[in-house]
Image (spheres, rainbow, N blue to C red):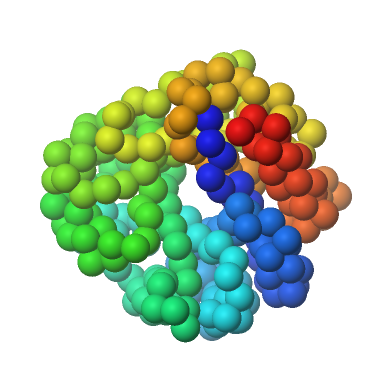
Length: 247
């Protein structure tokens, strides 16, 4: 398999902008994703202001940034509406004309599943941002929604998380479920177990399959429960050199 991106999720305002940018410059495969929902990410809140600062600093720094959209904002997007707080950020472009946020993950499998999913309206949003990669969680409960979106013909990717966000690595990983939509992997990944899990993921994927990995909970400092830049660096470094050995 070809490891395209190594995603670190849920860095926050207690991390320094320079630490994120420097790590992203050191490892071009690294990606940093913010968790976005109105409870903690509305305008003027500390996390929102911090990420806005990182976005503007990244206009001239070529690092990979992503946004993972949750709860009420997830529901609005599934109804074809981009919340203002989200839109002003994803509309921001680098000096070369490309969007600063390269990927947007819509966490359709989080929280209550009792919400409308209008595939055509979601497809219209995807078409409006052709250089941004949209990602949707894949789970049995979301199969009908995913297939309805696929029928619209728009490009998107899937994230497989066997633990449903609980941070538990499965004994084995699932092979890709849709030919036209690449799949990434998440669930209990850590600096300590990433090499072993990459071996397992590699076993179920074709040699030329392009994928990515996403870690969150186990990148946090056990004592502070905050995103730890040193643990993130260890995770990225281990995955990066795994990828070099398996080219």
